[in-house]
Image (cartoon, rainbow, N blue to C red; front, side, top):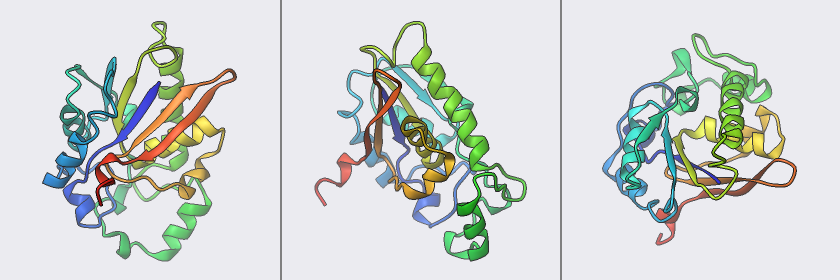
Length: 198
């Protein structure tokens, strides 16, 4: 099984920023959210993380005791010149173009299609691993970001990258992908144990 964990709330998330490669740390709330996922990832046999601090600190907070393997393919989309801007300040025509064209590249950034390619490669590699970790009884946990996790969900559903705009993914959420008779299966999406008491 593959469990994809979105990092806990970061300072950039709390400030309503479009957050790509900026290395925004976790808030206290984000750290608590990450710790609440410990039961969700219990029994993990491998732990992989995006290189960004907010993902690595979330991976540590899960308390698996496993070494953290950093894989650059799980890093957030590069938003280029838009990175760090308030979501509300991004022009509506940019959002419209972005939502209608997975190949749209923000100035100096990366397209959703490009991010989708690297994530699909990473997913296929995990499920094809010789040890069968993700395909068999093992539980591979990947701590990443909103866009790569949505790309993995779209991959599991056989959808194109445009499907990401139809998915909502909360901070510190868990998404599960298993392997069925004919390929990947989305077994759970956007599970947030920290919100159960709200």
